Image 1: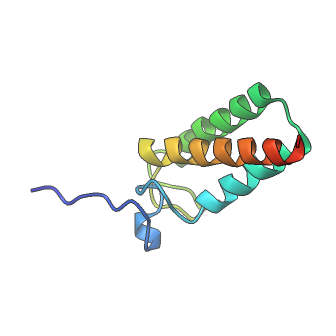
Image 2 (image 1 turned 135 degrees about the vertical axis):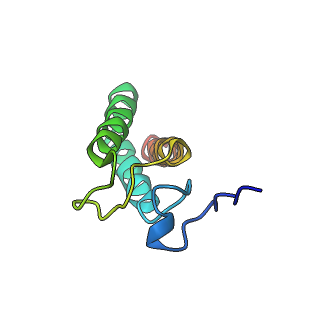
Length: 98
């Protein structure tokens, strides 16, 4: 039986494999900053998704010294990074536009 992937990375070895890792907070901060500054939502989503693709390409096949990773990001990690950034963006825009 295959070992299940943890949802939250508890060690550096699980980073980029688990949907939530230490870099998730950076994506939340990016979304909050972009939403608070009123960045166009489509430009925000395009920049966030493009960054994830470029980051994955940079880390393939064996990780990155720049990010301290041992492997490229998994698809669940990439989706979660974009998702949490989008939620933070939406919350920041909501607060800003009240």
